[in-house]
Image 1 (cartoon, rainbow, N blue to C red):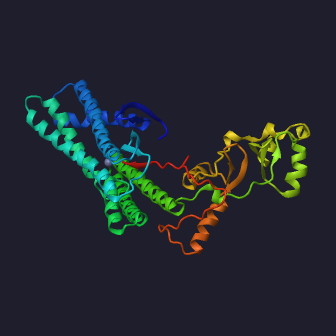
Image 2 (tube, rainbow, N blue to C red; image 1 turned 180 degrees about the horizontal axis):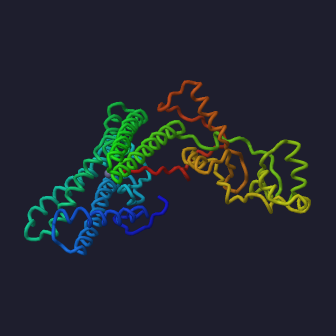
Length: 403
Ligand SMILES: [Zn+2]
């Protein structure tokens, strides 16, 4: 997550705090100090309420961390590597390197989080009740933690994917149907309905005068909606492109030009006669960049005779070059994120071996559709000569996330 800072390392898992988490820490401390604790334990100096608020807010985040650790430790015990846990504005998220491969594992992983929160909540309430009159301030903090953890547990059990309850639902549907894609589709639809309900409830609260909580609930709904849609499209993409590597979809290498060529020659001999808009640039047999019409315009017209292509091209390190043996799944988000229409494909020796275009990817989907190859039923990808047998996933890691 951008804007995250590592704060600890527990059981080989990096614990990160997002900058948005600090904002919530401040807001929560403030609302506890001003509203909550004065109502629970009256007659204390303001400073006491602020200290109580701060301690309670910190302990709530510890509770969220324990909830996430429960997910992550079960994931690790089931052989799924966990990269990190991030605390952010809506709580926590465990970043898995891989999604569970069996419904049973997903079920256990998902359900353990809310269970942990419910148990923590129960313990805090019992403890708070026990020390009650003897230590009213500590009891007030424990009481707050008890209620907050119970709410956290119940909220996460709402069956909207990607909330824990939605993952439990998906695991059950997955087990029942044997089809992960269909189960995800359904769980994601339920998740979207839940998200819209949150948004509607938020709007209603807003116009009933509860402006802050209305905004907050609406915001959570919006977040859930994004997450449900993203999770669904990720699984759909994975299913369509499962096992497909770039080498299978790339087109042959196009015309290239030398980095030493002058811009004038480039325009006269390549750009104008062939109507090209971008040309890969090589030095010897190495790909070193790409020259586009926009790059050429950067050089004043009177310098075109002398200026070499290499001086104005977009250099290789800004091109996101890919390798033929990379899986397509790992590369599509890259294309989408940078809004590029094509990526140069280079071999291990740095030579240009082809281009991967967005059109080729779309054509592949159309052809599959035209052949009636249903999404979610896999046919083995056609073996292509020259493609390495070892489909190592240099970039194929998928970051799964459990909130
Ligand atoms: Zn959770």
